[in-house]
Image 1: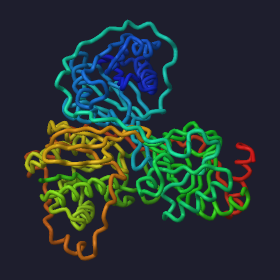
Image 2: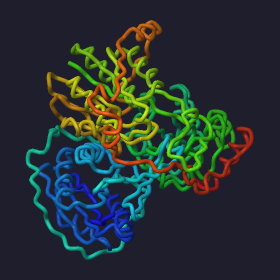
Image 3: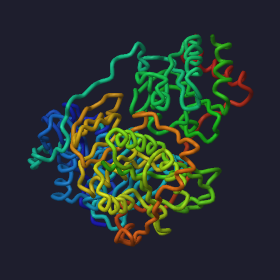
Image 4: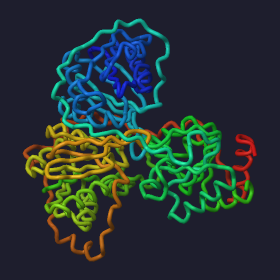
Length: 321
Length: 259
């Protein structure tokens, strides 16, 4: 397999470079070290020289700044920009983040341009046959090893938090690349709204009692909130309870909610979907109680118990309350 | 107004999978159900059509077990269902599936395509947006709110951390729908019975002007092997009755947080 290099595609949105871009660079350097060819980082958005410096890490050979006609991320502009980059440079591997932004353009580009493609990738490699990737299968019960036979370029969306960020400073040349992106946008931005701050900040709590789908009705939620208060914990939840309208979204932990860093994260009736686990990687001690012995949360937890969450919570109230 | 809703019957492994380096799980171990995200997409489609009149068509690429999911959609109010299948398509990746869906969509010419953000089994979050790419449709992924006024869509795109972006675009378009956008209805018993009388077509790739090999040639990846995940150390399990479990948890909490 010819090694034509690795392209990291980073997005600058509202002036901000996504922090996980450093992980993409770390992963890209590992591929380059394994023989995939030189590592290039391209940034799209309202890019400044400071953004270029921020991605100048050891192993990066070239940094390209691509200005977007839109002030914030627009999926069709991103698709056009990456399509043009791939067409002109023909890299072997393109790395982008598995983010809500990428989900709006990467699959469309992959289908249209006939790229090798995989999302939510947690492991990558480069060998004689080109790129390979690892991702979850069957709701994370299994992992799948993928390859991409016959594909000149492979686009991989990497799971955030799964790769070591590149930290050592580099000395790559930075240049601006003009791409014709005028007229590429197909959506019009009306406004952005950040969620109103609630009465409770789960991101600063030391002890979170977190509940999920194992909770059967709204009454149980109220009961568990009461128990949380009695044992000195703050109540947080996984997404299904917000979707059900039982709990406001400022209590939600996970990718689409908040990232938390408590000393103890007590997960009751939370199965441990990837999107949820993304929000608790900084928790010091994770304790999981679930009636399903196969729940993926047990792989992420430090302590686990297969039990009825309500019985354990009630006992806990007596012992800690 | 015609809304096309691509749905998926997702596989859940029942029991311990024996793998031995295989690239697929034995079908005997799989249980099937309609993907959770697709329930929300269907509900959004039904509400749009109830408001403005029109037709909701559900389509899946799936084996015979997927008909149950289609019948559930028909019972909830979809007007027609289409199942695309060929045994060679087992394990088809999102891009191959999108290629087949694109052929159907080209025939159906919907005003709007509403898919789920992702499926709960493979979690690719790719099929619908790949379909938008093949059809050259404007699209928004991860949508938490939809309003339609004539051919103008106003949608809420979900960003990380609970933030929302409000976007406008014109139909025809494709949106991927996030959970929680609405409250999916339950079908009445009567509707479940009546669903069997609604049109449910089964098409092979040939009827869409292609064949299984050509469809699979669009695949973006090939599954070489499946494995049990490396679990690391995993959790230290606490055994015993609830009182004993609570006792151990109380000790850990006291030690880590203080009392």
